[in-house]
Length: 315
Image (tube, rainbow, N blue to C red; front, side, top):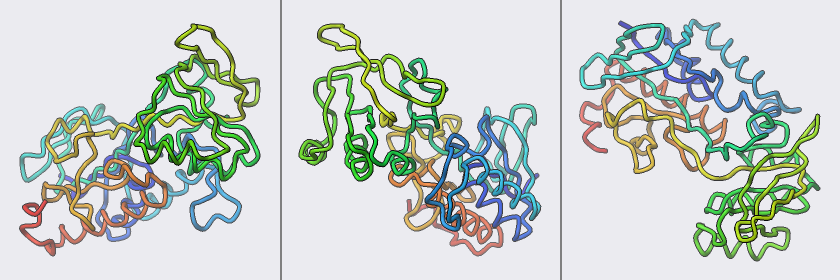
């Protein structure tokens, strides 16, 4: 039986591991198929405090991992295939590791950005394809970029990108946007934003170094063309990595884990959630790390018997 199991090794999970390891809680971190989380796909991180000249995403995550290991956190590779949160000791079925029992559980499995699943997309992530305007917009100062999507987040990111880019082209496969009227109006009133509606993305076009265009099909005429660009931002939503929980924990309608306001406590005593798996608003490395710290402290206090006994009823 373990004292603490942390699922996920992004900024939230690793920060939780650092804090719990320093508290001598001997946390076990179960890494999934993408150790380090989404930051391992980011070439340069310039907005994480403490790095004046920025830092490579994979390097930042490796440093955080080594820091957690230094204090005694243990890392295991595996994929959770089944969970049982109905008993006092939580049981996890982990591929290659078998069944693990734990007193407490920290869920930091993150959320996966939805992709277009077109040729040239995945292989050019970090080479001109991005799913985070806040993270990567700065690198496109004075350049022409495309944002794919028609919802509120796409409009918000399009407006954000105009702070840096010389031109932002919104590509959407329908002739009408899904975004709220107020978000649409803000985008349409921005002179830096142009529109390519009713066009379906077909392929990310790149040379040997970077993205140079997006091939699209006009849905009315079936004519294909390449829209030249320096970067493509995909903004069609995120999916929280919670399907493995199989409805055993309280989530919102889209699958994000609900936590008690101001804490990382879920509706199950001894189970905590941090990072993007419970945050669909900010989705930044620094906010994930901060919530990882909160989860560690909430978990430590719970283990020490200082938690309020009936908090799970208040959700």
